[in-house]
Image 1 (tube, rainbow, N blue to C red):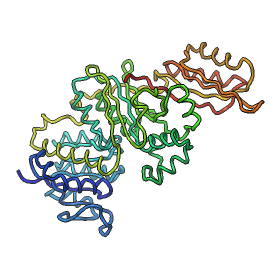
Image 2 (image 1 turned 90 degrees about the vertical axis):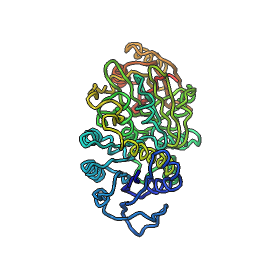
Image 3 (image 1 turned 120 degrees about the vertical axis):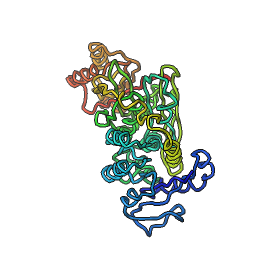
Length: 437
């Protein structure tokens, strides 16, 4: 069969890794795909920039639309990132009947519903495994490997930068600013780390995972999102003292006819698998009714791992080129007419445990008044710590982990806690994971 010509948009770290992988494993890739897969054209920002891959046989241009519009290109590989330009290029490729491979979680999370509808209309496929968790084939696992299951929930560490920062805070005793600076120095965090540390990157990925797990439209704008900027080293130590570790999780869960989609710092039992994922690694746990819990672990970023997912998508795309469109795996796991707009739950309806730390006057009876308020709001205690002041006359700290409860009740408790004259401003609140290993 004739070779498949690929037009590459973006020749940065992942693009170069993809070119190198296609060259190094060309024979194996050809055996799997059934034909030669080759990059013939690539769009770059600077033609004179030194490359980390060979470009012999690749026509370079600074005009990405020249690549998309080339009639000899069969597959467009989008690795430029971002939103607006990537959207225009991907839609132009689809409208010309060209298949698309992308690693752009931002693009898929925000515009995937439109992109997949256009792809179905033009009988092309859009593959996006590299958009979530780098080299971990989590999308294929949920969409195909677990297709027989009714997915109950999934939870994952899906941003390596945030996980690296929390690991440094735990093991090195660093504060957030120090750990972030080290992540930037090592190349794990961008100069502007907003997407990573404020949870936006993880929310993009959770939108994709939630959609393929539950058969709902991509719903990035409805995800409850909280980052890790407010985590203190003290809270990491207090959590550990009570048998927990703090992880930044993306969680998607069925909840009485609704779906929870949430990204936030989470206390996880120190015995749980996710609690022991450290550094820049990613891990996702998925619970299906037939299979039970399954765990997927590995490198969530980097040239090699991401290129692994990109090239796997290229191979799948080549295979599907000769398949009747009705026989292809649906983009979001469910047939397009079976995607249902299930209600997305607000945080007041989340059912989980809660961690909070409150500073109080060091006076008799304060603890009993706080526990009395918890009982009044029907909130049970799982664990409790009291930290007495080091100097007489200073405030004390009370740290409590509750049993699972509807979050709306906890919010009402916090409102009543504000009315206690013994409490001080600066309440720290996090959620506690509720899932089975």
